[in-house]
Image (cartoon, rainbow, N blue to C red; front, side, top):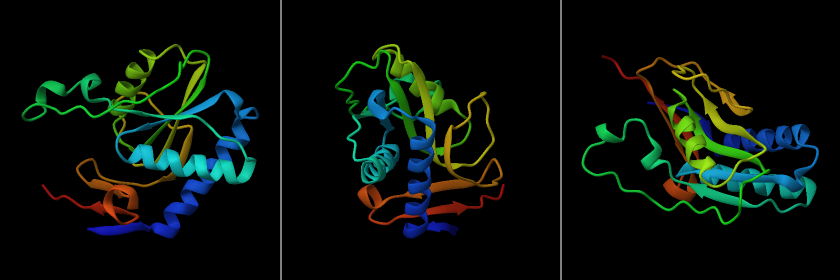
Length: 177
């Protein structure tokens, strides 16, 4: 196991994501954030906080659980437990910024897009991720990326955040088979 990023480095990545979002969305009035459970929610909250500091604007946000939209739900051990999705506004014609911690195969993002459509027809969906580790199985790319790292398919990348894990860090475990 190796720590790739500490708390200070993570905050810098989040600030960079916020700056890119501001640069690419001249009118933030129609922008909403949707954080994917669990850590995507915390990253979304932090990005929104940075944007508020820079632009003095409050951006609506929601949370998304993709449990029942996953294409591997039948292979999840026991019975999957869904958590709460909370989107208190219509997504129709909104610029949705979907936020997750790690982009890997793209399957979670595909499931999230399927779920979002149940809440309206967004003008567009943009993707922000803290870590892009490659190995896509679907043609999905992030619009905003904190950083890209090279990994092997079997490696394990974990984002830990104070809000859920009591520490801010990105770890990689090199799995040997």
